[in-house]
Structure formats: C-alpha cells, structure tokens
Image 1 (cartoon, rainbow, N blue to C red):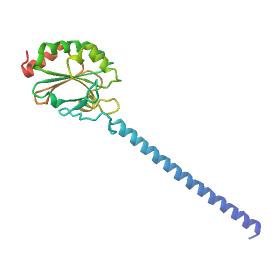
Image 2 (cartoon, rainbow, N blue to C red; image 1 turned 45 degrees about the vertical axis):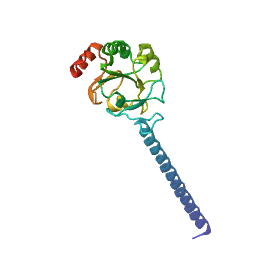
Image 3 (cartoon, rainbow, N blue to C red; image 1 turned 45 degrees about the horizontal axis):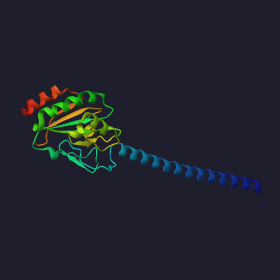
Image 4 (spheres, helix red, strand yellow; image 1 turned 120 degrees about the vertical axis):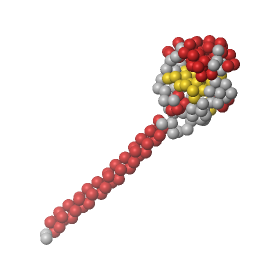
Length: 203
C-alpha cells in the first residue's frame, strides 16, 4: 500500500473514531438529561399530590382532623375537641357565592339551637381571604374557625377526604365524632335543621 493510501486510511479511521466518540458523548448527555427530566416530573407529581409536607401540620382524616386556626395558625382546632355533642363542620371559601347565600342561615340556626350542637367553620381551597368573609358573616364571634391544609390548594380534608371539588361542603358528625352526613354543595338552613332533627332530635 502506498504511503498516501495509508495516510488516507489512517485519516478515515481517525474520523470514524471521532464520530463514535461524539455519538457516545451525545448519548451519555441525552440519557443524563432524560434522567434529570424524569426526576423533575416525579418531584412535581409528588408535590402536586401533597407529598411535600406543609408548614402547617395536622391530620386530615374524616374522624381525626386536627387543623390550624384560621385567625391564628398557632391555635389548633381538632374534631376531638367537639365530641360529646353533634357537630356541624361548615367548609367555605371567600370566592364561593353559594357560601354567601347559605352562611347567614347557618349562623341564625346555630344561634337558634344554642348549645345543643357544636359548630366549626373550615376555610378551604382559598387564597387567604377567608377570614374576612368569616368576620363578615359573624362566624368569628360564634364558631371556632380552622384552615384546611395539605396539597397545593390547602384542601386535603375537603378534597382528599371528602372528595369535594369546589365549595361549600357541610359535614355532620355525631357525638362520638363519626360522620353522619356529607353534603357536597349548598343546602338551606331548613334542610340542615331537618337533618339534625332526624339524626339527633334537636329542637
């Protein structure tokens, strides 16, 4: 083989080796990038499902919830605090027009029934303006007020436990803290009174 042909062959081999090296490097880079994206997607999905913990910790089970206070996050509002009497948990949000319609009736009913029934307001799926509405309705001087927690919208109790999308939600518990009725969507004070009368004989 002539010297020129050997040089040409050597050059082609070198070029082929360089192409292989570049291809290998690109493959490693692509796989690394794919791995980073996969991890990022997993983390985002994990966070969206509420897997990050939250600064405001507590339980959000149907019969075990323990939530921060709405006006003071250091305060704790727990379902266990209300056992011994029937309890109405009224979930609300500042953007909820149905809440605007039903809350005045609930407040009047709570005044009517007095100490026969416990009441608690739970702000959920909200942007931080819930306390203003609670004060407007007079809840802050009548009921304990809690804030739902967990997940991206702070709504693990309403959405995670009770499967509620939107607001309002009303949950009635018996004197042992067991769920008696779940109302997804609005209801009148008259309907609520009828449920309480049927379940507990209140008057």
